[in-house]
Length: 324
Length: 245
Image 1 (spheres, each protein chain N blue to C red):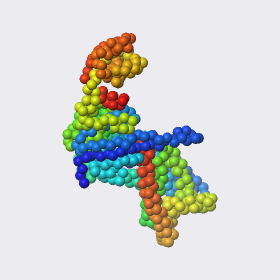
Image 2 (tube, helix red, strand yellow):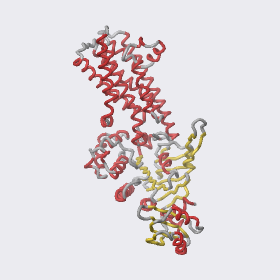
Image 3 (cartoon, chains in turn orange, purple):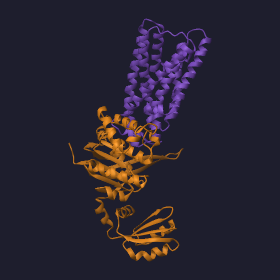
Image 4 (cartoon, rainbow over the protein chains, first blue to last red):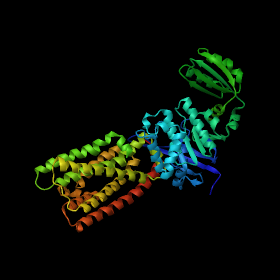
């Protein structure tokens, strides 16, 4: 039965059992995903965002059949993730991202041929598809070179090609732009958008809110294993419509000073980006410009280059949701 | 196979070690009476076949974890049993090239007179022995999938088979309590069948019963491996340990 839903999860739960200690072993249970329910429509570009350890990768691995859930049910493309593993695996692609996941001592073509065989792609289709994918990813000229000679960006494109080798209906992408330089990340996002426009369902996890804002039709925010919000990016931003964001760009801002901001009752959240030559603070508050004097007081020892009051973004909504 | 060749380290345990053993055994066999040439050759061949099979099913899994590719291969529609089984067979076949090279060394380097009395029988026994070695490797492969120390297990399992399979020296020389262990290994019967075909023109009941036992045992290994792999896959998916290094 062909459902309108690409993914339908109900009370999905994953508990890991670990042990501590050597002589006297203490058993511990870690609840990675706590009874989450959500659905993804066919053709949708769906985002799952959350902090490290929130349960994003565990959710992706359960839906892509790499992990069995502890309880709950889910179907992917109308197939059950526990009982119909093979049928799901034939129809999905997985891009986990990162440096690993490729056979670096052989060429791109050999990597793709191997995975094409594992996916049961017929030989007559295989070579044509590999050629098309390599061209689409701009890897044709280096297709016969060992992957270990590839740049980070080229490896990421090969990851994408590998994820598409079986022409999947649904692609899971776990933080596909992490660690990429801005230009390569932008190329990758464009490719993801093109895939979605081509009719594929894309399930994406990311840390980058601007990426989720740019790409996703709907976004689910997961925190400590639970989904705390699920809506379109514009609707999620309404969570923070009552607030403004004071953005401070400076030098010499310390983590202690950032902590001082968190003590102010009117401050909802503070995010800090510490780069070598500057730091950027984003202070979410309903008070807006009224907080500037406190900003200047706390940052009296730092050099402030710029101070702006901005409209809240998806990142601000996300910070509020994960902090609350 | 390409990956195997891409990593030059495979040469040491899979080519150089069997060669060194065979050369040493051929030298020693000249100093004793009786024909021990086939022990030298089959011993070297067994080192190649079993060493390669263990590499395919053990070390390769560990390598896949290091490369981060194991989850990708696990998440394809092809079952782990098929993936590792295919590698085991192809790697055991690589052991055949060892044997050919060892034969060349024996004939050319040592001018050892080698005659196979019943060549078709010898080849038949050889092919089934290669498959039986692969099938045996599959059983251990299921343990390799679960453990994070596959290479430790691989190293530990390599030597015992050389000793108890009767490929390097007669099983009769071993303590009696090892004989049941030796006879429970399918390759032991294959080695005996090959030795029989090398010296007897007529293939009697002994030869066919050796082949029959080896074949039945190999089928049993595959059946056991199928059940083990199913359990192992389920366990790895429950515990989430597949990718852990």
